[in-house]
Length: 461
Image (cartoon, rainbow, N blue to C red; front, top):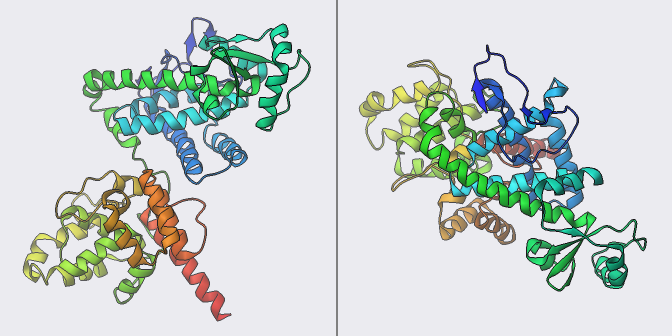
């Protein structure tokens, strides 16, 4: 796959069998396509697929039921993976997969997440294929299975029926309708563990509607190996060769925030200095509340903490003059007014685009905060990831999270679902669902203020 500038022409993927058909199909992503990709498509296609994978991740983390996940994935794919040129839909699918394979090959944690989400997506898409297309995919994978003959099916029909009924399925009595495959039992550990298949002499008898488990296992295994190989290529050659072009895009994509950037609140002055302490208690997410409290306590924050909290305050509506007054009041107690004006005021004005290159900096997203690495004496980062369990429990308790919700939050933390842990905290404190999940500290603040103001309005009517 070759990435080209937008002014160059690009062609559709072709293989030894000819051009890719525009009709819907399920790519197996066995090898990177011989394909030229515009630089802007390289990034935009990957972001669109990332929206799908992150949506799947959120749905699974929130414990959605299979039928709910089916509907969710359909909506995610339909919304994000379309293309204005219908003949390019399949190309977009293939390109986006291989770009994200490059993005997520680089660490074990990234590989694990990508592997799980792509496997979940593949399962969904395989189930939606026709029986004929499913069999073609099985042949393409060269699966270690063979169809059960009519005679063997008749001899095992009663036992197969017992297993089918135990999992809520009905077994067709017709040998022409019932399609089963014999598979070495170790190839379908998911079905064996769940006691969803009949096992005889080392073989599992897998119904056609269960074949997805076998196919997805093979897909996951092949993708896992491919990610390791891609990581080696990335580390030994690609990263250095593409350091001025693709490398910055690749390294940024895994932490991409895909929602509003909150760089400009609807109007400045949404919060004032006299209200900031009260608003911090009611509507700041834990990461910002912790920084705010440490600033009040120590009258100082290191650079990374000042950036994380300062840009957040900018996003919630603190204008540059109030921001200067806020930081000046605290820092002057520790370093003195003269030193503040000399060493710190410039950076505050810089964040608002008033100094230097006049860049209008955006508040940090959850992903950026989670991936930060606070050191000794630092207070930035994501408490759900960076706090010890005892400190996290104490912080959540001070916020007002009850014991039942606390255990739910800690369960998500142990599973490394940090954003979902924050979402559950929000829901516990506001007694309201947050279906979209928390993806940005300023989103947390905005949603909190909206709910609190609605309650005040309702109580006054």
